[in-house]
Image (cartoon, rainbow, N blue to C red):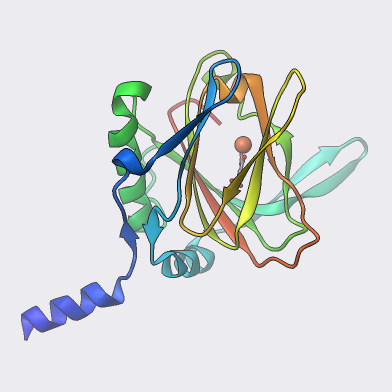
Length: 208
Ligand SMILES: O=C(O)CCC(=O)C(=O)O
Ligand SMILES: [Fe+2]
């Protein structure tokens, strides 16, 4: 009976963090920037999406723009180093990323920023994650997406063609090398009718 209950619990918990290894493919950009992709990294992502949507203390950021205060068009939450993450699967993801990139990165991923894009009108404008050491040093920002697929666009700061990186349900995208300094990224608004998307960004100490 105990065994049966155990297996039923396993079935109920359908979230699966799949291996990284050779499933990760790299695209080299200019200036020593690169982007890694691993589609369908997390299985059972519906369940993770629902849990995060329900359990994360989402807040709207208000930002001073000229002489008015505007809502940033997405909801946010942030987990600092040592904060328990809102779902055990995210701790498993963070630790798997730290292990996979250990040799290249030289330090673990320790923080998690979460964003909720409620529909196609939610977005983030062109920017680099340049608060902290990432202003001068190479680093990595690893992003897990759950929910409706959206595109992440990257473009060189000095100008040039942008690169479209699809971020689908359960997919991993990692920006690395000089990507935060020499390239910008954004999630553009879309007129397509899209449902909500949650993005989870893992970063190292001292980078936002
Ligand atoms: O939604 C995403 O995946 C990107 C979010 C992002 O670039 C950021 O919050 O710095
Ligand atoms: Fe960013």
